[in-house]
Length: 239
Image (cartoon, rainbow, N blue to C red; front, top):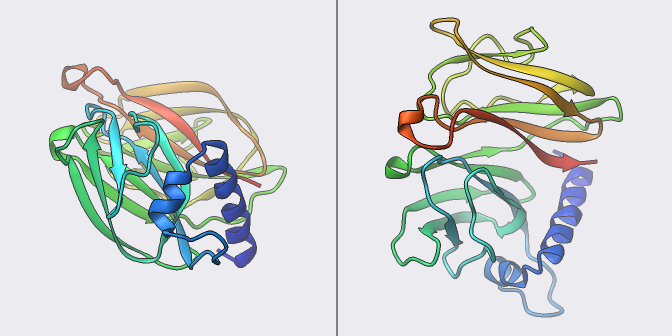
């Protein structure tokens, strides 16, 4: 990802933070004194995909960084973090116990997404670097994230064809970004084993100049929890 894109994301990320009045986040991540230059940073978003996990508070090594608890299917937006080895702790909202502690490495001027996955009893975090080609007015960049913990290999059909995400997608697989023409699409999820149609969603609008993640989330078996299998289109970036 080139410097131009990083600067665009940096500007949009700071705009989001100011809109949310997240002064605490800047303090926690940067420990930055007024008037001092911002140190080298990476950008990280966090998506809550654990279908039966509670509302979550996010803590860095220093302090809590989200003003509002992170709920299932919601995203903590791209925000700047110190580079190097980092640690995040996830706690049930307003609770003292830690549900998940994870360590990871962030490199300067790179952009990442973290997905909280699995059932609450086995919650884990998957981090990927977000690398996409620049979208244009006629096309978007889209990737698929298979985050449904009780759904095995699936085939994802876009307007009745399996392209661009391949013939099968395993649980916890997060594909590369692919170009898709703007317009309204139909998405069908099928079991790769049985061929059974698991879910069909019509009239998903894809707009140009955007970068998306199409998330497969929730439980295929309602006995596992109340959040059933569904699709969600996340907007990562608007040019």
